[in-house]
Image (cartoon, rainbow, N blue to C red; front, side, top):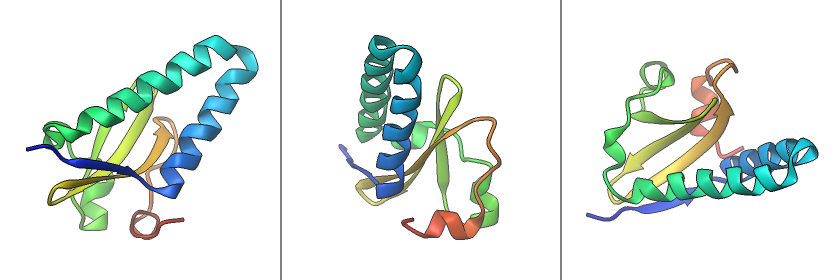
Length: 105
């Protein structure tokens, strides 16, 4: 079954912010990085459950999963046939709080 993959406003801002940060030092690398990340996110349309639950899942009482991309974590939830990408975060950042996961921000 193919899932519909949606990026939250927060995830869209995260991707753009990370891209701009990388672009300051390496414009061509930044464009490739962003495209590879978006391609990986799009791959969630098939078997999104293949990735492990995120550490935030237990505290949030949600089935939040994480997909790793280099030093970054893509946090998402699967609801029926929709995959909602919540955020893209550097792996060194603190885990999200439950209230951050439930809001669109």
